[in-house]
Length: 237
Image (cartoon, rainbow, N blue to C red; front, side):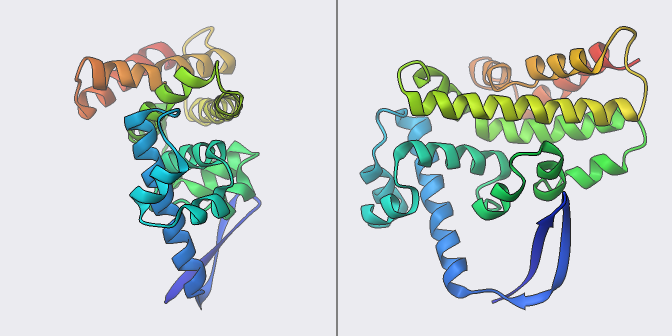
C-alpha cells in the first residue's frame, strides 16, 4: 500500500515523498481502531461498569487476548477511546497523538484537519464560526462518553484520572482558540482572554450539547446556530 508519510514536528505537518507503508502496521492500526470503536459503542450503551474486555473483543471480532495485549486495562481503553472520539475513529493514530498531546498548539496544527481553515480566516467572527463548526462535530461524538465518565469518575480512580486529564487539555485547547480568535478582531469590552476561555468552556461543553441535542432533541444545525449566536454576542465586539 502506498501512502504519504506525515511527520508531526514542531507543531507542523511535514509531508515527505510517498513511501510504502508496512502492511502489518496498517493492519494493526485498523484492528486497534475497530476495538476502540467497539469499546466506545459499549461504553455509551452499557456504561463503563457494564463494559468488559470480553465484550469489547466480541464486538470487535478479535480474541480477548488481543484487547489485553493492546491496551492492558479497561481504563486505558477508555482513555484512548476518548482520544479517538475527539479526532475521529478513522483518523486515530496513537503515535501521532502522543507526539503532540502535551501542547494544544501542536495538537491543533498537527492533528485537526479543520485548523488550516481557521488559520486562513481574516476576522474574529469567521474564526469563531470555524471553531464552533469543528467543536459541534466533535461534541456529537464525545458528549455521550463524557456523560459516562462523569457518572463513574467519583467511584473509579482510573476514570476520574482520565476525566481530569481530558478537562485540563480542553481548558488549554480552548484558551489557545480564544487567543486565535482575539488576534483576528476585537473582543467585547472587559472580555479578557481568560474570560473568553471560560465562556467557550461553558457554552461549548459536552453537557450543554447533550442537553440540547439529546434531551431537547435539537438538530445539529440548530445547535451550531445557537452556539455561534450566543458566543458571538458574549465575546465579539
